[in-house]
Length: 122
Image (cartoon, rainbow, N blue to C red; front, side, top):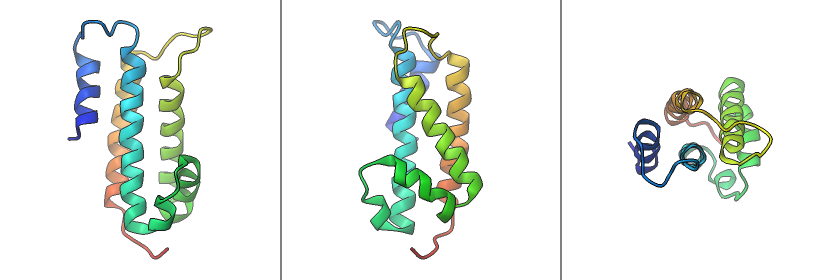
C-alpha cells in the first residue's frame, strides 16, 4: 500500500489533532493523487507518449478507447468526484467520511483494473 493510501486511511479512521475541518479535503486529494499515479503507471505500460501529458483530462478521455469504456467512465467519474470533494464550497456541505470510504473502495477497484489491464499497442 502506498504512503498516500496509508495517510488517507489514517485520516478516515483516526482523529488527527489540528485537522478538524481540513481532513476530508486532504483525504480526497490523497485519493486523487493515488488515482493519477495508477493512470500514470497504466500509460507508461500502454503508451508512454500519452503518459507524458501534464494534464489529466486527455489521459482520462483516452482511457475509454485504450482500456475499455467501463474503465474510462469509472475512472473519469472517480477523478471528478475526488476533485470536487477536494475543493471547499461555501454553499454546500463537505464530503463525509462515509462518502470518502465509498470513493476509496471505488479507487481500489479502479486501480486494480488499471494495473491488471493487458498492454495493447499505442
